[in-house]
Amino acid sequence: MADRGRDPEQVEREIERTRAELARNIDELADRLNPKHVAQRGTERLKEEAGIVAQAMGSLVRPAEGEDGEPGRIDQRVVLAGVGTAVALTALVLWRRSRKRR
Image: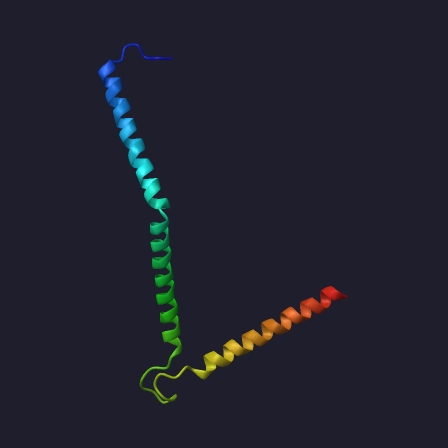
């Protein structure tokens, strides 16, 4: 029900504020959905993830000094653990497939 005690100028100001707010919201949504900006955000996300992977790979490399071997070489224990895990997972998948066929 309409409030007849309200000042028409106050109602107009409220309408203008609402219009301005809606216009800002629409502009913000258009900016978020702009394909160029979506691509930029995706590129930034990939760069961040690549940095995380590079840090993880850096932790696999032996330190420059030490009795374990040459600097910059990948630790063999890590490689062997990875190979062992891959073999175990492959064996598990093959075993489960063979059980499904029975």
